[in-house]
Length: 90
Image (cartoon, rainbow, N blue to C red; front, top):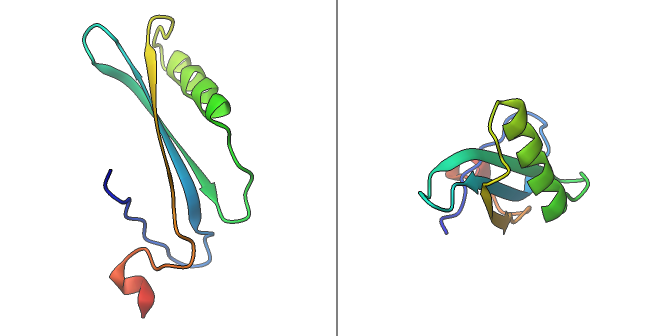
């Protein structure tokens, strides 16, 4: 998996973890909804279960029938002390 590129400006807290949840049709592979959860430095952790529930809730709110959809979760951690882009190190 490629490393995510985040750029920060001002005093926004850094992202320490990200979970991407895809709700897809197992028969066709078509992704019906994609939900992203970012955890910022100093913020509370979000469990995989909570992230999946939020993905379903948001998808239903947008009109998707999520009952038949399968879930794929891609979590990854960010290194807090390393600059996220070359311009951040100056």
